[in-house]
Image (tube, rainbow, N blue to C red; front, side):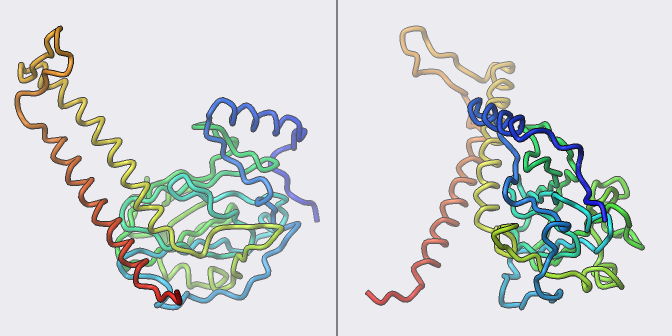
Length: 286
């Protein structure tokens, strides 16, 4: 058996140099050093597949199962690819494995990158980008994402456009019927976390998703506000500040973007209060 390398490995000094330069320059460094051990070196040893219990996730959210059927190709890997949700790394995907994530409803960005000695990319540059897609998930729904380099699902997912990134390529959204078929998710083992291959899957990402969504929405609304002001200036509905009082001036009509910003801030404030109330429901011995 020949272990599979992707591609010919450079010297460690080169990898460390790239990481150091990225960190010093403030770049986003994508890496899974210490987590990317492949199936050739560390076969998955968790229990056989079983759906998680209904009380382990809330129907207000969505559940995503990730699975990778066995293949000799995957079994020969020295390093396994990384899985990111909304730009956060959660696990490296070894042969013959499955795991799950509970996520907040809405658009969830799914990416997979293949590492090279743990290094995967800087900012928008990726050494090997396997998947880059947005999956819209709904409350109470269960989704199955299948990853394989050597085989494709028997039938496409009927809800996806054929041009959707998760309808083609190596990572695909499949139906429950496909996932439950022979040699599919039922044949895989749980991707447990250990010292040789730590991961942060099999958990809820809901709060992280909600915080990320808020930051993204606020950035988009601030950009929309600037565009709205430029339109008002062009239409004569904006009063410039006088030279002697730089704090004057502004739009002569209420900004629609300001209303949306206030509504988004209020919604997030209510969410934070709900979290605080939920944390306060615990029992204290002191």
